[in-house]
Length: 111
Image: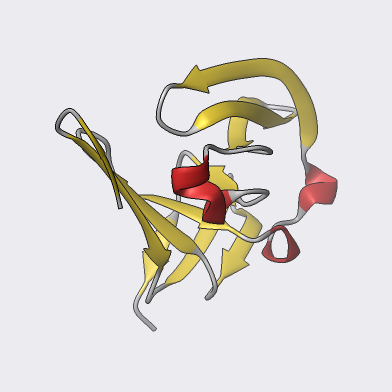
């Protein structure tokens, strides 16, 4: 757990089945994702690269910086810019998400 001036981030294994779908196409599916909980933000699921159909994604030129997590890189689909992001070199406090992909929209399945 990371806590800086009231801002808290936790990363832990998710005990759920997570699927990312765009226009009916499954982009990722995992039972091994990590859930990142951050003050003021929705829970985000970070999926290991082995569970993501990376061949469908195109790297984007977009980069963003988070003072708590580090610098993010983005990937797109032909009809969906910057749909996916990852932290190639995250800050030490969230090192577990390194190389994992996060999608803006995921389905959490309880199967």
